[in-house]
Image 1 (cartoon, rainbow, N blue to C red):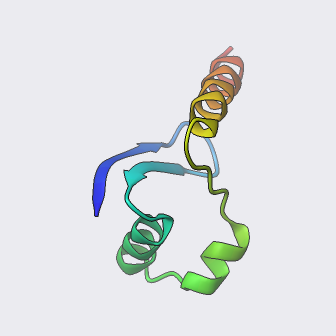
Image 2: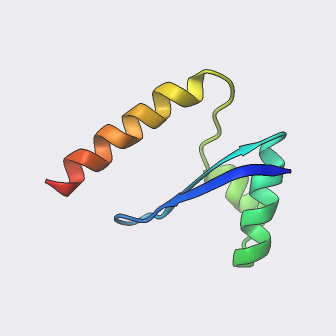
Length: 69
């Protein structure tokens, strides 16, 4: 189940983040609505779990802020 989903589309590539019970929940949702291939998506996506997600999101914000200036 996907509890929260947000999409960042400032520049390519578009990034999707979500709070899910299992990473496969978000992967399956993404591939179903985009007609993507699950195995290809898994091979190319970044997955973070637990507290590691907070530091990764801070880095994403920092990089997006730099991209806007």
